Image 1 (tube, one colour):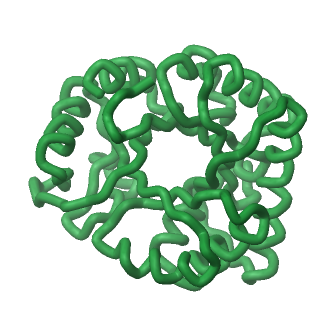
Image 2 (cartoon, rainbow, N blue to C red):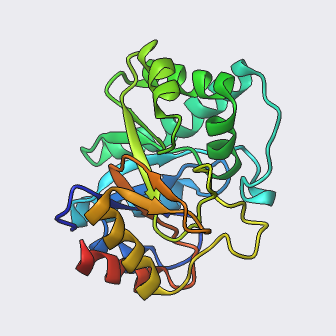
Length: 241
């Protein structure tokens, strides 16, 4: 477990095959719950691993589009989006309860995460739905220069927010994630990743790909489980934190 104010989180249950090796190294698991990836079997296995290693459970719902791994935006009505969120989060919630555990937060996946941060109406639907499922559930969102906008929307429903930083993703000078379609979207060198996070912990600034300093609040730090260097990166970050 990490010992800085930043908790380490990882997207898991997505069929990569390295889940069991990652759990001893993290604090929070974002478990795919059947939208973009995941099944009852993978959810069961991941919940069992959270219990074994004392890791907090987060629901990781996405657009119901496993063919595209939830990385393509789907135009859903607010009602349809709320319904798929309730179904996905509910599946994981039931499994967690059978193990005597509760969900701590919700972190949308892929295109839904990006759409939530770009479109205030989608953010509104997600914040409202999360609150209706469980008023104690937190919503994990991308920390950005627009935090106050999202805080205002979440406050309508009493939805607590948890601010996320990305260890292995580059940022634009505006504070967005560089799209995965760009060649410099992902970072792979554990040494480089640890250095930029150490700089953030020392200064409160995370550098964009062009060196622009971004003043960002951070509660949790994500490393993607589908990054080929995921385990090496997480081990290095754990030591640094």
